[in-house]
Length: 405
Image (cartoon, rainbow, N blue to C red):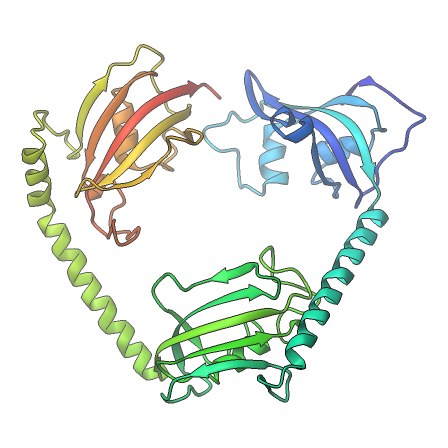
């Protein structure tokens, strides 16, 4: 660790404090991260126990407000100790130092952060209590003995028994109108009646929804996630309106048989699509007057603009823009209008057809490729527009190549 500015009269942080830091991480000629891209040019985070002697956290524990310093450590320690990897990945060089430049701007004491959080949670709890009281005092609503508020239930189908599999759509909306979870605009999801994964109130509400019907409830936080909340989705002390629409109920045995039939039908459809793929590709090629010969893997590479920049090598950080189409020429996804997609070439984290196409390209180049399913998403179903064993078409623009080895 090397210091540049030292302010011995200033305070030092403790584990649990939040700190505001100017931060830059580099290795060789590569910039991994810079807080200059953040709002106000700084980053704020909690100071935690060092993962090894000499890491960034250990360095910060030795700094005063106003100090600037660089911490240097081997990428091996960063990968294995901090990130929990088994070894340094192939696209990085073991034994290389990583440099972390830091300037400690501000310390926010842990006690102060905890006090702010307590005040925030007390406010959330009080707001929920006030809103709940409006529902409790409304005689149009039914209140169960456990405190679930039933707003309305429609339908005359059979009710579910504990252990039954319920095919439902539902959403959760906070009492002040924020959507917490929304599973309405999709296929029904399978939920086991009686499961408490989403709280006692959710489980109780489902027992009141008839098959083929719908129900509307208010679930108080005491029957939901209480003072804990749900990961990063739902704050503690959050009550919510639960809207449920049911489709069908199954016993466990019925559901297992239904799933078996569904899988068999899906497998048959996927196999049929795979067998018919050559004919689909042939028709597409003919309809679009494609004149190039496919590669050995079946990829058609059509160069649009010849690049003049660097080529791509294994281990390079590659940046591309792309358009993704299905075989019916429908645009499914695009990176244009956003940041280019970045990935390490040769690491296997990109569609194989794209990696093959990049072998023929230089920075600045553009190409269109027709990718058979074996070089695309394979037997993975992306969505209705891209079922398993789908042929896809990409427009690719090679934006940049960075050497990181």
